[in-house]
Image 1 (cartoon, helix red, strand yellow):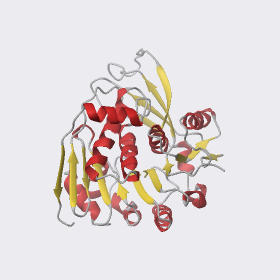
Image 2 (cartoon, one colour):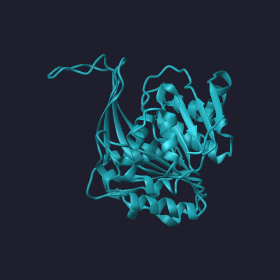
Image 3 (cartoon, rainbow, N blue to C red):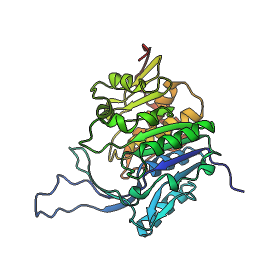
Image 4 (cartoon, one colour):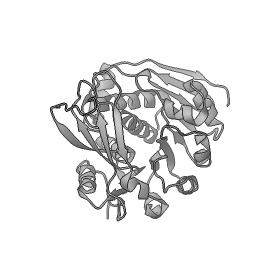
Length: 326
């Protein structure tokens, strides 16, 4: 009999195609050279599950890939990290999702994305019996999973909560979206931890300030913990009665593509360890920083021993204060 899984990471699975950093994006018709072009695993379900596996967590990935070379690559990449891939389903309609990531030294990353089999992942692909034996359910990439609507997501999270699982939700919001709260407010009722970045939280709430963003989101579930990630500016965590705000660790960044997912994995590890919020934020911040050390979303992610050593030798500012009820 297989060992029980502690965490299930469901959501988008993506094959990432990256080139070594180029000086600038080519002009029309221009050819530029780069040192190498790489293929890596990516997407929230992939990155978060690999990062958790590096920390020694018993974890499974749940999502959908195509019947193709890229899908085979993603499954092998997860399996070599010790992630259970038995609940990844295969699409006969679409090829595996892919993203081309363009890196330059002085500008933010650029992404070219095809949804592929992620657009075919629905509630019918989810094994509810398998979920019920876990301790925590993470769903990442909601917003670009076109067959997973809000009612289906709410049903999934409600099921997990009834079975005693902790629920963690992360989102991807395409540019140009408006009134996005109408796509997630039902699901937030059954969410224990919600982790948008500040750009996503701005679209959800209409607020620019991360503190105001978290305050607005808490109105949909005052028992939830809202985690706003802000890249180089750090993170802000808010509950109904506490605020914890942290700066970011200083580290040489080569490719920050998987930083948010590594942060999430660190946060989940802290939840599973029943730590105080301040300790969780420090640990998650270190994990997030580690992802940027090398090209690829998970290549540079710390192991458990590495992250503890990094925290011993590096400091960030963590502030905590009481908050008024939203």
